[in-house]
Length: 271
Ligand code: DGL
Image (cartoon, rainbow, N blue to C red; front, top):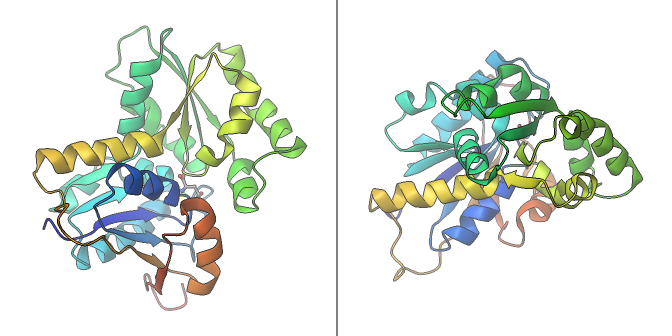
């Protein structure tokens, strides 16, 4: 399996922030990315629907022979945290537990904030993932529905974003958090705006970096890393929507490596 690509799945473009970290931390690995752009965003959808869509996409990646699966979408991870590992023979890495472990490592006061989509917030997946934490740890979850819209529109700074950040983050500031999990794939693109509002005393935890580090650990433990002697890897990108529309925004999230973009078909015809 060593030469097979790593399958990375997201509802759309945001998982490319995770893919970026994977390319940086595992530069010899090939990536097969799949974004369910035709049915995104997942954030406002009921959790059962998110689960069904995500399973269809993950099944498709497994059919392509990937050696590991990364569920790069927080909403999808929240919807299937319990059962994705039982369904597939390859290792499954999701974004929630790696981010929680990282937040536990950086918090001094034990007061941790989580910002996310509505689906992730309502699933309580982050709260549950902190269940084994010591009693002094307190978690404060805040949905930020407009952040995804801003990022997809290319608005990552300016008065509108800062005003929204002030509004969403106020309850977390009142709770006196010292660590904040960016519990949505799009939020790393808002890092500067979030830091501006929160100040340096709050550590921002990106699930992208923590997830890529977890993937590195899993592949190293399994002795399943691609050989450095092989030619440079080729990355492939699949979208359930229009491949031509995918490329420009995908390059903004990931960079120039987005070259080979194809169409994936999932769900019933017309869906
Ligand atoms: N990828 C989603 C997440 O991380 C954000 C975009 C969406 O709502 O589909 O929750």
